[in-house]
Length: 167
Length: 167
DNA sequence: TATTGTTATACTCTATAACTATA
DNA sequence: TATAGTTATAGAGTATAACAATA
Image 1 (spheres, each protein chain N blue to C red):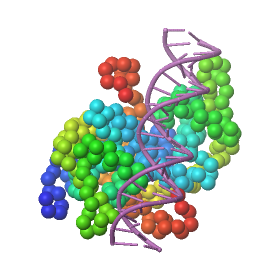
Image 2 (image 1 turned 60 degrees about the vertical axis):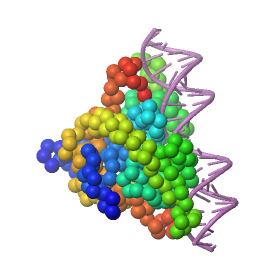
Image 3 (image 1 turned 180 degrees about the vertical axis):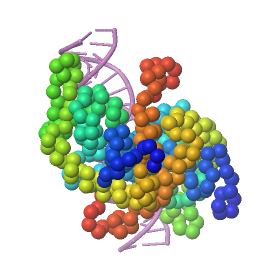
Image 4 (image 1 turned 30 degrees about the vertical axis):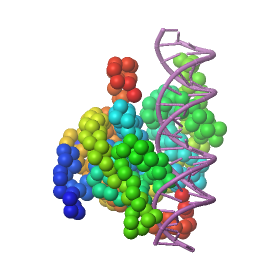
């Protein structure tokens, strides 16, 4: 805390550090998604499709349920998304022999290859979007966000069942 | 490829620090927006409406154009949003006598009072959402995000006009 | 009966273009 | 002519419930 933040009231202090961190997060998330959509459209991918491919490459084959949980996308919405990716031969779906209800989703060679192109486009977007931060600061930001993500994607098993407040 | 994924690409290093910071940002932004929507619905506000009120309280009266730029929302979409807020007497619109094309938007007393309730609900959401971070880390995250926001909401005056790539 | 994937549907959010009134 | 606000519309994202196949 050098010269930045002096007074520390409940939430905000400076007029510049505008508002709630959550609203800031929401706003920037929308903004960067828009940038991604623009940069990825020549490749033929949407942001969510790209996220799905990246996840499948990173973590390997998994069920649709697991993929949906990882991407924080509802299982019903995942179906159409994977249909499109499968139609372009970027992923494959096959029945899990151990539990025939499950579809094992896997990224294809074509999908993996396409991700090289994606990496370049995404890196350009991010270099522009995070231009205000140096390399260390970006790493710090990513680390903080990753920790939030890891704690948040446990969507409280108690709250999901039906305790009191739903949503 | 046993279990841990040992290969290290350009950006990430740890297997845990999964992917691009931008995609992480996009995903968390969606997640926190969902939480806000749930927490604010009993109050009768949507996340974007809440953001508009918070901004108007923080920065005072301004034109719709200025508000739209601050919220990163298109002027055409702002109209219906403000119509709803005005119907509930949470904001007021009046012509700017100096330039009668402009509407000066201002938060009302009722709107300001409602924000007290909002603050409590939002604080609860954020305490839960950022539970993995301590107070200093939250401040650091907010500071980093605020800097990105300040640099990003200058949406490149050259790119907007019509250089080459639009979007 | 519970779970996985699927389908259908409605609702919100976003993006775009055309219109008006003012400048 | 250019700008501020408005309107209308199409598209993308999201949430919900109901269903079939399998456990």
